[in-house]
Image 1 (cartoon, rainbow, N blue to C red):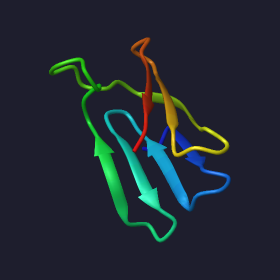
Image 2: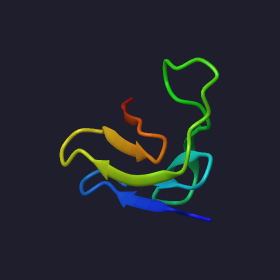
Image 3: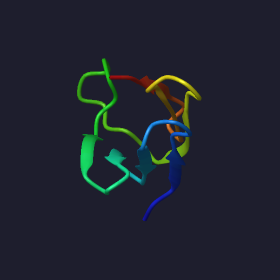
Image 4: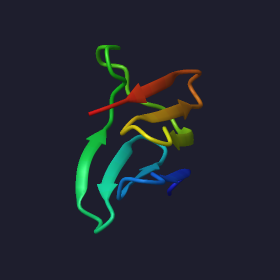
Length: 75
């Protein structure tokens, strides 16, 4: 089940999160990127996504997880 959703205000992309993955899609619904593990934390699977937010001008995504980790994703 989806636990978080965010749309970029200027770039036609959106992000959705669930219990064990984070997905970034185009406005058409095509998957651009999917994450199941935390960046730079080898082998650590992501927990439930609790919040998502895009930077208002840049293609940056901040994600907060219930396992007390915050990650920032960029191009």
